[in-house]
Image 1 (cartoon, rainbow, N blue to C red):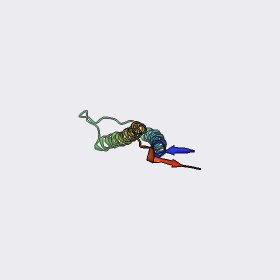
Image 2 (tube, one colour):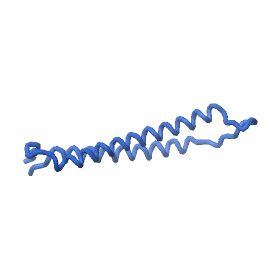
Image 3 (cartoon, rainbow, N blue to C red):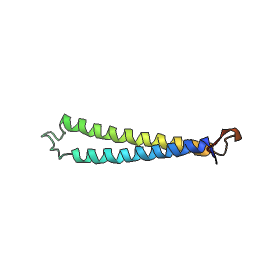
Image 4 (cartoon, helix red, strand yellow):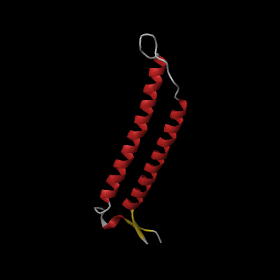
Length: 94
């Protein structure tokens, strides 16, 4: 049985994308449980700690989303390169 190396790379990249997506769901659940109701100050502004926490949650979500976007791009590049692979890239698994 022969399998193209590009196909194996594609399978690993898809599995890695799924792992990153599951990690994103776990991070979202953890961050959702950490949120609290914040009361605005007298001048209508919010406390500095609440702003910092909001930016940190936004940055964590953006980082996980960007990592998943990169995984998707890697998977699509591997997928589009499978038909372009030369015959010499095949590996005999027997």
